[in-house]
Image 1 (cartoon, rainbow, N blue to C red):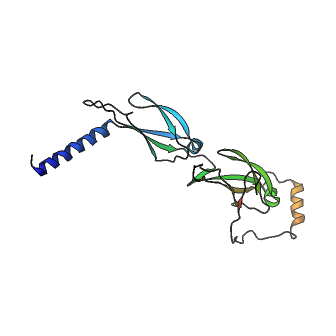
Image 2: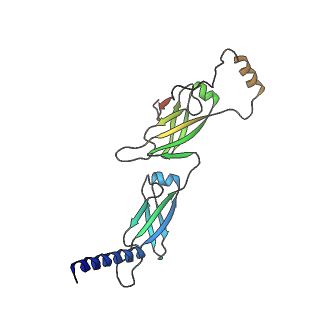
Image 3: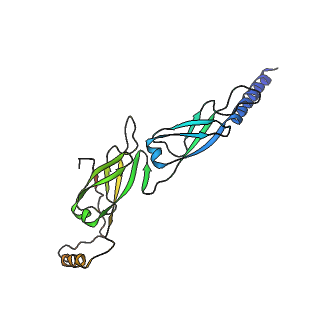
Length: 208
C-alpha cells in the first residue's frame, strides 16, 4: 500500500472499530427522585441484555448527566470484548423545591402574625428538620438562608434558601375584624411602595 492508502485504510479500520463499539453499547434512561438526586441513592436496574446492574447515583447529580459502566454492554459477534452501559439521568421535579446550582430553594408558609412579630419554626430540609428564626416585619417573598443545607460538597456546600409566603387565615372571625378595624389609622402603611432592598437573613439551628 502507498503512504496515503495506508493512512486511509488505518482511518477506515479505526472508524469501523468505533462504530462496532458503539453498536455494543447500551443506552438506558433512569428517572431519579428529587431528594435522591440531592442525597444520592443506589438502585438495581435490568439492562436490555438481561444483566442486573447496581447503579450508585452520586449526591448532587443533575438531569442530563450520564454514568458509564465499562464492560456492561453487549458482546460483539466476532469479538470477546463487551461494550459499555450508559445510564442517562433525569431528575423528577418536586413541588415547592427548586435547585439553583448548589443551592436549594423552598417555600415556607407563615401566618401574618408570624410575619409581623417574628417566630421560630421547624423547617424541613433535604438533610432533616432545622429550627429557623423568622425576624419581625417580613413579607411574602422575603428570603432566609439556612447555611450548608443545599447540595453538600467536600469543598463547599450549597445553602437552602427559604422563600416566605404570608398566608391569611381561611376564616376571618368577627373578633379579628374588629381588632383590625381598631388598628386602622394608627398603623396604616402603603404596601405598594417598592422595597429598596430585599432582606436576606442568615438563619440556622440556634443562630439568627
